[in-house]
Length: 240
Image 1 (cartoon, rainbow, N blue to C red):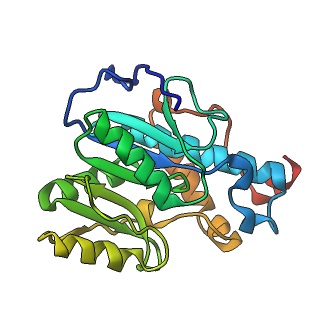
Image 2 (tube, rainbow, N blue to C red):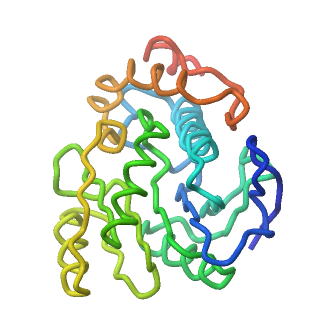
């Protein structure tokens, strides 16, 4: 396990000196070369790697600019271009639920309180999306952000994360709602475009292209984790 410490743009510490009970954000990403294979009709291998890096950088920039988040942890098989000040816990990268389980075990052992679980492919994500998710979860104990179909889970906030069954994948919204009710909780369902729009298919990529530009522009430049720019047209990716 590779873990480093560093500072966040607003002066809060992203590293190991985080107080017990703090809110941690966990972002999961596969090995970049294995990301977004369904976009092969639109992007070549290098283009898909670049897209994965860009979306990860965007999500990390939003997390780092969100005041309610105290610590950031990435779970992935590789550091790749991840900035040195961002903490990494390694996993096999073959299952999202196992990745989040690995990160949850580490975070709780390090004294984390609430956990915010995020994938790395939310190109329209904004700080106010995370604020809404955290506020809803703080009030009810759990907040679920459904995908655009309304049946999956694109983000999950757990006020008390230990032991809650993670079921990311098809039908995960219902599974997470059921698990919450079994624990006496009425989950907050947070429906926002920035949390709904993920990128899995060519249609997704084309549908959310303009939203990406708008969301990136909303992040303070000091919070950005990638210096490269999002291409203006999908065709440019094939030349990467």
